[in-house]
Image (cartoon, rainbow, N blue to C red; front, side):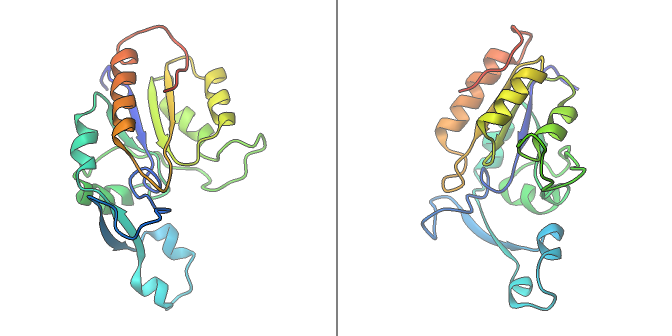
Length: 188
């Protein structure tokens, strides 16, 4: 364990801008994968299953992310398959820690994003930045009330993926909150 804050990464939205309006995003390449969670929801033998899930990824993201002053971990439904399928394409280490979700897509009684409670438990009081396309104000309020260390919840638009401004926000936040600064939740 280091004194660096955690950077908890989602795949779909931040790394794979799945809702992009244009078929070709600058710097991104298209790939076809068959992650187990997605595959289990497809019709056996279907054309869609045979073709695989289209994912667009930017190979420049890995080096940019590893250069940030964070300890990286996956916070995605891809779970360990992110290390197998996504990491090699974007240039991330293939042995990043993974949050293993107890009940993916479960409905939360308080209307939180289903990842929020398990993610907070996994962070175990450490400072963290979380990049995801599904974060809401309700999640921010919940984390602010229940996490004593600094936390940045950075919502990434699924049409755009991680952008230069997001890397700048993450860098500034890590520099400010990475080494024993006053406790509390902050945002961009």
